[in-house]
Image (cartoon, rainbow, N blue to C red; front, top):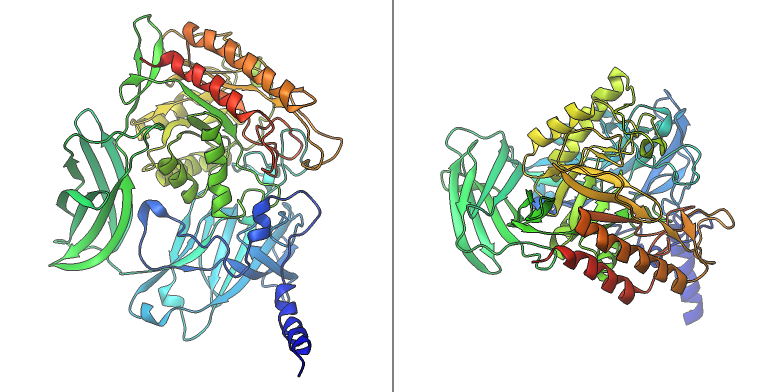
Length: 602
């Protein structure tokens, strides 16, 4: 047979498999979209803050069906969806609305590796938006509500010989429900974006013992040179112990042991401090032991750093990093992608926005009404950038009216909505507690669903006293929390001042520059102020930075520029939505930013 004929037969044999997936729609895409392999999607270990040696990635092509709410067990499926990309996204290969009147069904099969015999098998979901029900081999094993945090089930009792079937049903009412959902709306426009329904983070399996470590709480204290590690265990017996070894590179510098249920406090000699300028991380090895036998073993890390506030020599309350005044200057980071929506196309893409933010000279990111996958926070820990973490808003109250009101008016939530908020905010804080890059919690933004502000602020502060709490970024303002946060567009302005709290400019800027060929939609783009070219846009940015320098002297201790990238109809990013163009002069912005940051350096 001729060589060309053989090649043709090979192509015909593989073509149906290759044709099972391709990006849907004609919207702009990132360069990383071209690198996606449906057989190896987001193949990096999904939880670096607590890493075990063995795991199995279940991302890939699954069956999907969109059915009316309340229907059960689709008789047939609509086609293939690329997990973990949401059904509305291009990279899912589906790009269809689901909506509150429908449910999204998934089906896939998997096999358990033979060397996992004798182990318990955990099924992990990084995040599913919003309410999900899970079946293994036609047996319902659990449900979960909450669109931003990981969850898992021990599926060991429900496994059979050979191939296993996994079914998932998801319902997400977007802005028609009481749940947190960030910038998602049924009819996206302006500052509101496309809905995200279903699985949007990695799905994976992990073999474990019945007696194992469930989580790690890690807290550093640079004033006493100590690190406290609190392991939570499951299935353990009296007499089991936890051993921890602290590593500085390849060198073991400290060890500790404790009985289960007891925290381990380790003193370090002359510890290396973590900062954006020097993001040093210690590695740790954690073992669960019983009579000399290793029951569980995992890798983690920590940083020695402190976030606090203190009145300076002029009477201004300043944020401090590691007991020194430190101006926190960052970008409003939405975390959206033109091809993956909530989900970055690759891990390289996930880290890219952080790297570019640092390249532009910022030392902080405000993660705006969204929570990212665990790997994003580890990238921040390793690259060295401070994080202000927002609680995703929900249940009405949307709008910009908060800038006008400073009289304590609040949004009235239903009892169900309030319960959901409390449950999900606690879950988010638990999920991210041990990541050192997070220095500020932000329960509310611009009165979007803001309720019981003083109570929720005090609860947040009590639950995690190691970080600052910015109770309401942009108001409505109450005398609570550590920070008074102002929003003003486009220019920076210090129009309120609190002598007893840290004062920050939580949002400003929004300088728009639409670039043809890099727009989500043509002719319908929005910015607080718009210019025609990069030079004009950069000049305006530098002008604002110089204004901000004077306001640092007057009382600002932090500022956040809107925003990292364009998002859908918004064209006020430092980069285009597809990340292919830096819209501002990076060197000039970096220089201007450094001058602002240096205002508080000793």
